[in-house]
Amino acid sequence: QVQLVESGGGLVQPGGSLRLSCAASGLIFSSYVFYWYRQAPGKEREFVATITTTGDSTKYVDSVKGRFTISRDNAKNTVYLQMNSLKPEDTAVYYCNTGSSLYGMDYWGKGTLVTVSS
Image (tube, rainbow, N blue to C red; front, side):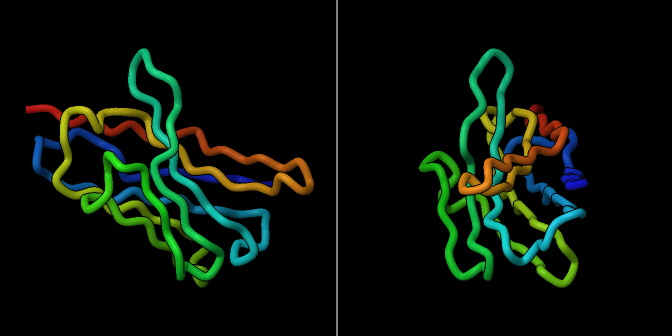
């Protein structure tokens, strides 16, 4: 059974930093591309960042470029999202996602809440 467990969310002041973690189990971690998404109150879920299986390539939504960094540790079965220079508009529940469209697999964690406020 595949499980994705996010952690690291919390309340932070504007300009602050947080590091989110996504611990995965029940799958061959190094074989999967991973994604971070977020959903702000009253808004649709949006893509934030993705990382390839080896971690050699990443992509970001324009609004977080230069502030967020996605990374992974295949030895620890964990994906990270380092978030710097946080803004109030980054407030959202952040979700970890992976799967395979080829095999119809789509896995989500339960999310971790990030609140950016003074």
